[in-house]
Length: 158
Image 1 (cartoon, rainbow, N blue to C red):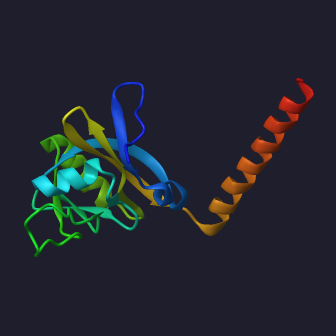
Image 2: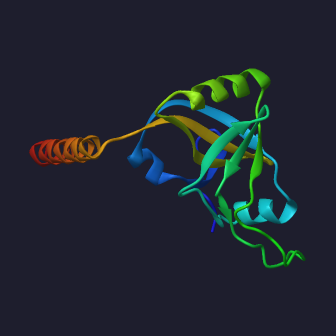
Image 3: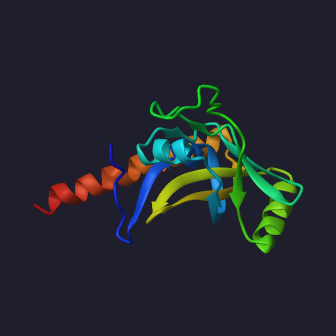
């Protein structure tokens, strides 16, 4: 199962679609991630889930929590924990900024995508604010109206 390739040579291994629905994304950051060999192979096969995962910053380091990377069957590690904490690689100024933003009331750090960038694996992080139920409904309503307008235009342009 190969990931779809973007125009600039990036492939999306996983996307957190639920985050785009549940959160308003204020800022995005790109970070590297420390993985073991079998985890890299699992991600390249698309055996990763971001749903319910989040990022914590403490002791000057960022960690991604509850990201599920499935067990790679050809590995020789039977004690593998698919939900272990994984360290993210960021510049010091980015870490300080993320720590300050995550300490603000109502903001959280959520992984949005995992990208395959040549031989590297990158995580796109979002500084997010949770949406209320009425915000979600209004977004769905706006999408439906836009879809109706587009279908009407397409119908009349024939």
